[in-house]
Length: 93
Length: 144
Image (tube, rainbow over all chains, first blue to last red; front, top):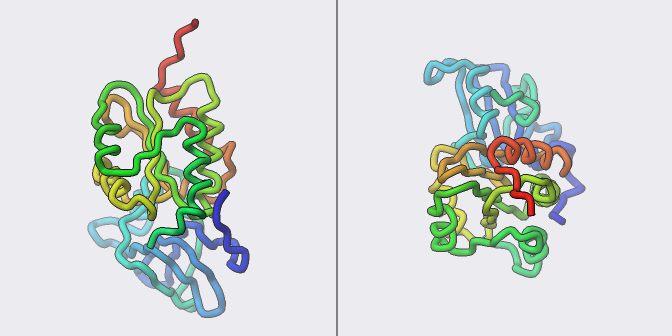
């Protein structure tokens, strides 16, 4: 038994990786996605090269245990989004 | 803000009725996780249907197998706030995640299934991952 929100898109409640056209990459729990962009909860942000880690390095690390959030909520505009994929689909190492 | 207990009770009972001990206070958590001998599994329960709706039945299926942890307990994230915070202090290097499942052997965290490894999967897939962990770390029950 659980609570469900059937008026939301298929990614609602799913932890996603949102790569952007710039150096930023985000991991957060998707609330919804529409023409304006994607709305995330409990969001972490990484910038390519930050801490010596590329975007790929960051995603691999996030896939193991998740991320510590930097923002409670965030909206990423559609024109900045390069890709959206599920964190759970990244193979854990 | 915690949900109504009326809403949450069935989610608690989905685990408690299969023998999962509910830890409602920091003291409950301490007494459970400070027992260092053997294997212990801690389920971080959650209201969220998107993932917890699969985590609980996954735990139930896994516990029906031959091998199982010596002790199994749960805390309820978003409901029993102090108990959940205390449980997370035992795995401080791991980002908070609910639902999630932590597995300890002799007091050491040896496996963690975060929320994103539960989302979008069905109960049998969650159970399959847990069964692999039980096979690796739990003893075969002695024949009676």
